[in-house]
Image 1: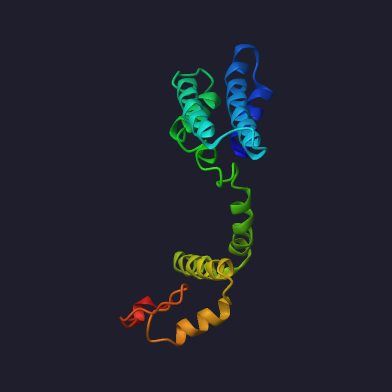
Image 2: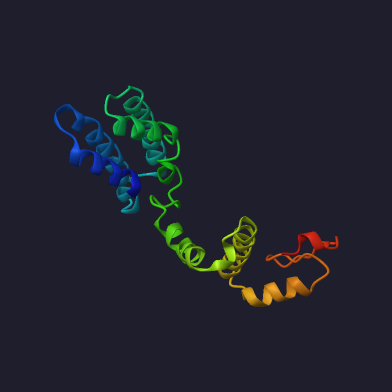
Length: 178
């Protein structure tokens, strides 16, 4: 939601005359969704009401984006909105889903910084192995497992290990070890 609203506000800043209508309508639509979410959190909106509103807003978004626009920036934004119309209001259909991906972006931030400053992943092979290792470490952290213990046990084991604690009965072959 934050990215879409920021993009609409940016378009509105440079829009003149009739070109202000499209970004204003997008902002109004997305603000309506956030207002409904806030009402739900204050227990003034039901889950069923949120789901119904999500469907209604998705339909309105599709109608809003179905017309061609003379402004190329507006047209590109409209295509983006149209392509993801069913995804934007997921947080209304599933109230435990956040309206923004801020926490996810913050979670990957250290990996992005590492990727930019560390030389071990400048090749495709290095980047591939770093992505696997980072995924395992982050999963360990989320499951409150010690990543170093898990990795050392995995590297010494002849059986694949699972972060969930179960062992597979097949042997690891050397091509699976990274």
